[in-house]
Amino acid sequence: MGLRDPLYWLYERRLERRLTSQEIPRHVGVAMDGNRRWAKSSGLRAAEEGHQAGANKIFELLRWCDEVGVQVVTLWMLSTDNLTRDESELGPLVRIIEQTIARLREEGWNTRPVGALDVLPDTTVRALKEAESATSGNPGLVVNVAVGYGGRREIADAVRSLLHEEAAKGTGIQELAERLDIEDIARHLYTRGQPDPDLLIRTSGEQRLSGFMLWQSVHSEFYFCEVYWPAFRRVDFLRALRSYGARNRRFGF
Image (tube, rainbow, N blue to C red; front, side):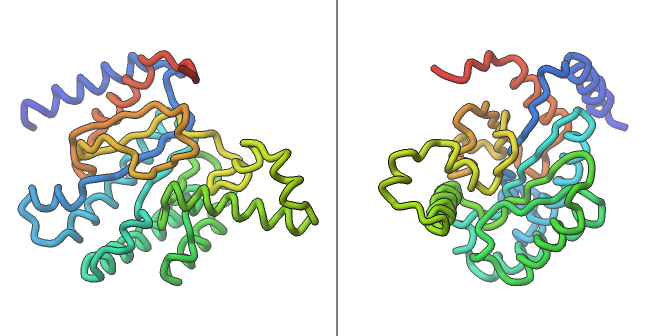
């Protein structure tokens, strides 16, 4: 064992001891960025190897979240923008995502799809729906799988769903416009019924949302870290929690 390992272990223990239940976010969203750059920096030839390493890291994160008492995790696996990538990369990435969904199902994580399913391959949609059906109601952590996800698309889909619902009731557009409020739209989001994310984490040093949970993040705390997603460690996770717990959340200006 190298010198760094026991030092990191001691540092983790110290961070963990300092956390209180009031400092644990109920809902954590993670933009798992940097898989391709990690593969390149590690001397690997294929981006696919980075995506696979990133997929494996997910299950470490879920265990960490479960241990500290996080209730909901949203994992941004594939954005609507990613769907325009070259098939030579997109095909293997989609297969890795489908394998990850199957593993979530096998391990019993309460899995819920979050995204525009109509833009995804049939095999991916089937994997998501089967995982949701098989794990619905399982105790413990809820895992939102954001595949084919874009924040603007989510809001547009929510408004579209609301309009269809009200039209079926015979509500006129003028009547709806006069009484429309925030909660009407919130009831049609992909994450309806869940608490908004308290903490959003993005890896790889990028300091932007890129459309991740635009509606829900109005009062979220953001944590950006330099490390690429496959190299994300438990100590990085605990630092994010420590940073979150140190902030004064005023839910306003």
